[in-house]
Length: 109
Image 1 (cartoon, rainbow, N blue to C red):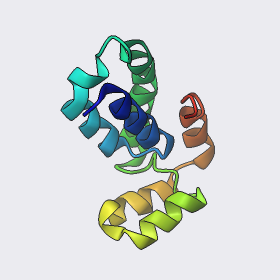
Image 2: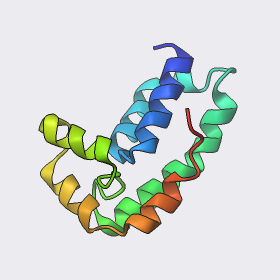
Image 3: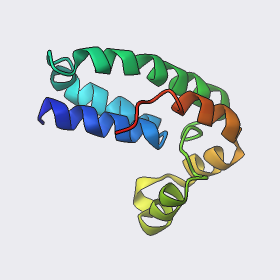
Image 4: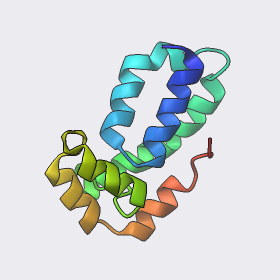
């Protein structure tokens, strides 16, 4: 995968709070993300990823998913295979304001 595409996807998964997909992408595309053109921005995003992991450790898998966002909610309904029901339940139960403060640090596209 092209390094710029990998970084775009990483930012998109972070923006919707899908920690599992973030971690999978980092694992699968680490070489692309460490490309000279994307390395600096990628490494700056790792602090947010660490906060996402800590949030999910406290509130359960999927709790960082921005389920209160209409687009994310619609996607979860239209493509239920993308979101485990436990993740949806954890996201609904987790404090939205804390989740929002973690994800607010992500640069927009």
